[in-house]
Length: 470
Ligand code: TYD
Ligand code: MG
Image 1 (cartoon, protein in one colour):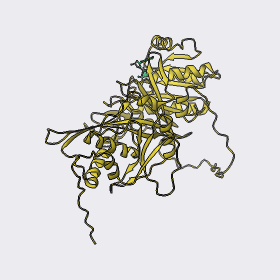
Image 2 (cartoon, rainbow, N blue to C red):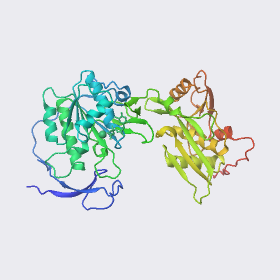
Image 3 (cartoon, rainbow, N blue to C red):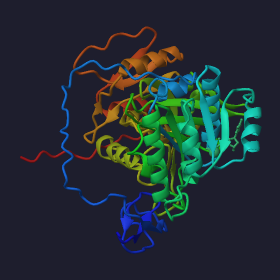
Image 4 (cartoon, helix red, strand yellow):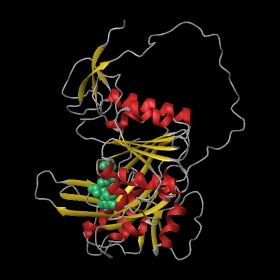
């Protein structure tokens, strides 16, 4: 008989260690190692016996049907999923507890059930009454969704194997499920992986779509969705700041569609409501003509999204000035401040700098560089950008302003929302097509932006001397 051995498995990243330690060497999480019995897989070990049947290789070309889709009829959800759920596929929705995963999925299965798709919602966290109460609150109590509470996979699998079993199954959450062949507790990496594997295999065989809910945990007390990302076809994260009512559904992996798509929702008393026009939402709170504010014309996937970037630059009383960034990369901010210093002679070193992306959104595009720089300079000099201006462009270390992708889509969205002026990278390769109603301010260097925002009475700036070594 194979000897079962124990290993210490990090509940955050799944790395296995022979000895316990306070910190996982792989991902750096603290206090996340849990002892687990590594059960040898049945029939494990390398088999060298040949089965006699060779692989059938085929050509790359050939006719295959596009995957059929089951629509949730929540347009934002369907778009992020790449056009609906694919039968026989597995979808993972991760997110912080309480962000609204159960709510959006209940809404989604209810809408699918309404359109005649057989759906099941299996809750391992909430009692039937709790789910019913939520359904009533969402006005979905009359929808033909099959509801059950269960945590043992041995109960769930037979129900899903039935001939007229569901076509879409939600497992809420995968961290509460367990198989009794494993000794470890529900929520450990071993349990989470085994349960997911079983469910995914069944989904492929029976052709239903399985949606797994996974809580993101900071403490590492239970295994996070990361340990499942490689096993499923689609991974989405549901994000948002607790204090804001906006929720963003983001696809980070999709075998059946594009990633980088986001869906924007608003959490209301009646559940999650789609926001078809997020730019208007993110700009709704904006006060015009305030120093330190710039509107960035960004892209999220295929969709343009306008957001306000706010900066506050104030003389510091501390030896090491403060830098605080919300919604953007702190290293990127440091880089832009260094470029402003070295290439434009704008010393921000003695100032506290705060940067905020309004509305609780997180931006990852380098295209936001120029808007961040505009907000910083505007705050430093107390010169507001006119409120009808949008800004985008990437900044290079030499102080040059670089082209970014999908400029036309960004500009069109700006015009649609009533913006009249755009500060954008100068096009080197081709003449930019004129866009009606938009006054273009094409710039080549960051110093041109600084000049635009420098008041007449400001002291002259001095960029560091440039020596050429030969
Ligand atoms: P939930 O879907 O239970 O989160 P998760 O499954 O990700 O843990 O959402 C819970 C939060 O959503 C809770 O704080 C209450 C809020 N909520 C609303 O504001 N309106 C609603 O209609 C519902 C159902 C929930
Ligand atoms: Mg929940």
